[in-house]
Image 1 (cartoon, rainbow, N blue to C red):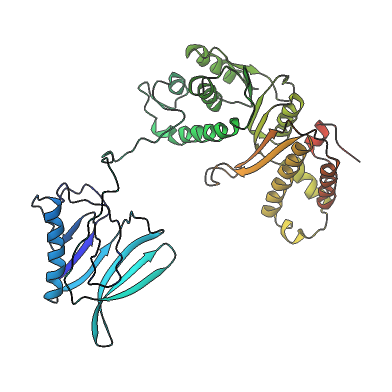
Image 2: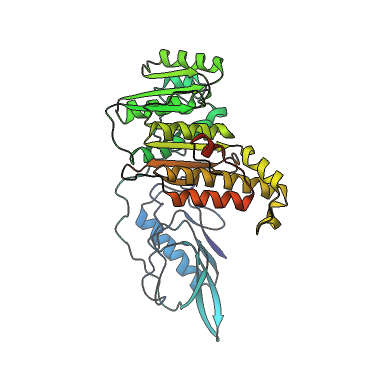
Length: 416
C-alpha cells in the first residue's frame, strides 16, 4: 500500500534539488478538475526517492503514483502541510478514501486554525495538475539561523563587548542572548515614541536609575549613529562603581556626548530634559522620575515601575470596603490591585499636566511580573490643569481608602 507524506523541512538529504515547491493551494470543485498541487517533499512509502530529476519529472511521478494507487486500490492517504497560499488560516489538507451511499469518493479535510471543512469528490477521472506562476522571484536564504534585523546590531559595537553582551568579534554571548534581545526591544519601543515628539536641534535625554547602562549606551548609539541626530545623553545612577565603569566605557568607545552622574533621582536637576526614561525605579522613585520630567516640560516621559509599596501599605491599612473587597481580601489580588491603582493615578496625573498617556505591557510576564510601561507624550496644544482629572483622582483615592499618592504630593496637587 502507498502512503504519501509531505515533510515540512526543506533541505532533507534524501530529496533532490528542485523537488521543493510552495504548497500554493489544494481546492477543487469536482475531482475531475485540475488539482493544483505543489509540494515540499513527497516520497512514496516505504522508501524515499533518491534519483535526481527535474521538477516536471518529479511532479509527473507524484501524479502517476497517486493515480496508480487509486487504480490498484492501494491508496491510503495524502497529508499536505505548511500551506503558503492566499487562503487565510489554512494549515493542512488531508485526503482519504470514503464510501458514501455505496459510492466511492475522496474526502478532503481542509484544516484551518479554528475549524475543519470536509468536502467529498468523485475520483473516476484522471488526475491532472495545474501550474501557477512562482510566488517568489528569488531563492530564500539557505541559512538555518536567519539574521534578524536589529536596530542595534552586534558587530562593530565595542561597548557591547565591554558590557559583556558580545565577544570581541561581535558575537552575542550565550548567557547574554536575552539581555541583547531586551535591549533591542526597548530601543524598538523608544524608536516609535521618538517619532511622536518635536524635532530638536540637540536632544537632551536622561536615563534615571541607569544601572550598568545597557539601555543608556544603546539609546545613545541609536540616536547618534542610526538616526544621526545631535544628542546629549545622561545616565543617573546612585552606585559610584557603576558610574565609574560606564564613564570609562563611554570614553573608550568615543561616545563623547554620553555621561553618567552619581546621585539620586530625587536630587537630580532635570531642567532642559526632552526625553526622560526611568526603567524599574523602585516604588516612589518612579514618581520622583515622573515629577522631574513634568517639571522639566519633557516631550517624552517613559517609565516602567517597579514595586508599588506606597499605595499597597495604604490599601492594607485602610481596609476600605468596596465592590472589590471579594478580590482584595486575597494577598495576590491586593498586590495586583495596588499596582493598577498606583499606575492608573500616575497616568491621570500626567494627563492633568497636559500629557497624552499610554499604558501597556512591554515584555512578557514570563521574564518579569514588572512588565508595565507608562508613557507620557507632551501635548503642546494642551494647557493642562483639567480640574475634572483631579476630581477623578480624588474619587479613586476615596474608593480605595488612599490618603495620598506620592506623585501628587511631589507635584503639589494634593487636595484634602
